[in-house]
Amino acid sequence: MTLFEKIVAREIPAKIAFENDEILAFHDVNPQAPVHILVIPKRVIPRIAEAQASDGALIGRLLLTAKQIATDLGLSETGFRLVINSGRNGGETVPHLHVHLLGGRPMHWPPG
Image (tube, rainbow, N blue to C red; front, side, top):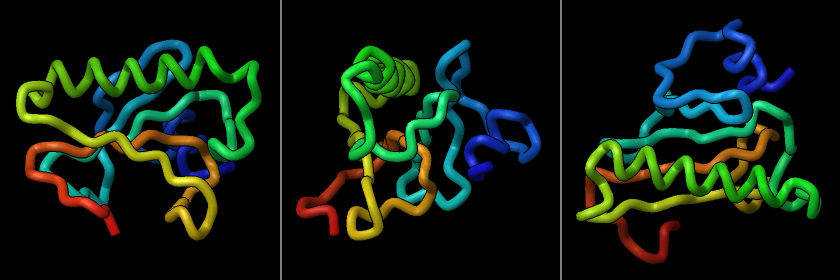
């Protein structure tokens, strides 16, 4: 079981920002910005590189959920960043697809 599966199962506590039947969003315990929320599917997709065409609708809902959370937090006017890491060189640390929602400060490019 991944760390995120344990959060979904409530075996590990998290500060929940959003939840429905398919998606859970929670605050990152090691935030890289004033707002740093992880948006995950409850169903495990290990990484975006392993996503299938049949996962497309769920991935779309992940992105739209991240956008709605950003809007609800007042980030839409000043801007925010969505990040999906895939694989070791991509910075992935948990093998469970997740979208990082980052905001509350200016973001720089390239990201690192």
